Length: 137
Length: 137
DNA sequence: TTCAATTATAACTAAATTAGTTATATTATA
DNA sequence: TATAATATAACTAATTTAGTTATAATTGAA
Image (cartoon, rainbow over all chains, first blue to last red; front, side):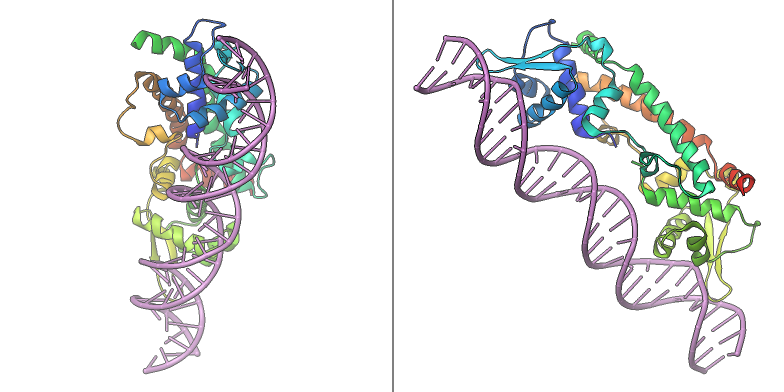
C-alpha cells in the first residue's frame, strides 16, 4: 500500500508549489496548514531534500523552498522516494519470476495491473495538484 | 498490498480448475503441488467455500471441488474475498473524502490509479490462468 | 464398529511494517 | 548570545502479515 507518509510527502510538495517560486515556508507552517504532525514534516523533508527537490536554510527567517519545477515531479517518483519501490504484490519485488511456470502467468497479471496503476501516478504531477488546489480555494 | 494469502487463493482455485469438472482433490495434494503450507490451504479453502466457489466432502476419498464456472471467477473477487476491500491508499478506505479540498484532488488521482489496476484484475479469470498453465506444462 | 483420512473451525504467535514520537545536534539571524 | 529554524537518528506502540497449533466433525473401509 502507498503509505500515509508518501501521501504526506505529496501534500508537502503541493504546499511548497503553491507558493511563489524561490520563496520559503517553515516546516511548522506546512504542518499547520496541512494538519500533518510537525515531526513527520521534518522527517519527510529530509527525503525530499535527498531527492533533490527541496532545499532548506537554517536559523531564524530560514525555511524550505522548492528547487525543482513541480511540473517535473510526478507522484510515482515521490512515492518511491518515501516508500521505496512500489509493488502491489510481494512477488513483484523479487527480480526473478518464481520457480513455477504457473506462478509466472500470475506474475504477468500482477505486473500489468501494477503498470496501469503506475501510468496514472506517473502522469500526475505536483504542478497539476497545486493548480487544482488553487482553483478550489 | 495484495497479500500472499490472496495470491495463494488464486493459485488454489487455478489448481482446482485444472482438474476435470466435478472431480475432487485433497487439500494436501493442492498444498504439495503448489508448495503452499497445508494449513494455509485449509484456512483459505474456508474462505473460498464461504464465497460459494468450492465445496468439500469429508472422510477418506473426500476432497475439494470447484462448483463455479472458473470463467466467472475474476481475480479482484478472489482478492477481496481473502483480503477484504482493496485500497492502494488508506484514504480510499474511508467513504467520505477528507475535510480538505486539496486532499480531494489527490483522492481523485488515487482513485483513478486504483481503478486502472482493478480493471486488469477484473478482466483476469481463473479459467484463463488455468488455460495458460496447461499450455506451459 | 472402530480406525484413519479427510474437511472444518478457531485461537495463537513471531516478524515486519506503519505512523508517529523523542532527543539531540547544527546553523544563522537579530 | 539567545533563539528560531533545519537536520539527523533512534525509539515505540499499534497493526498487519504469514504461518502455526490445536481440536472438532465427518465418513469410508477394514
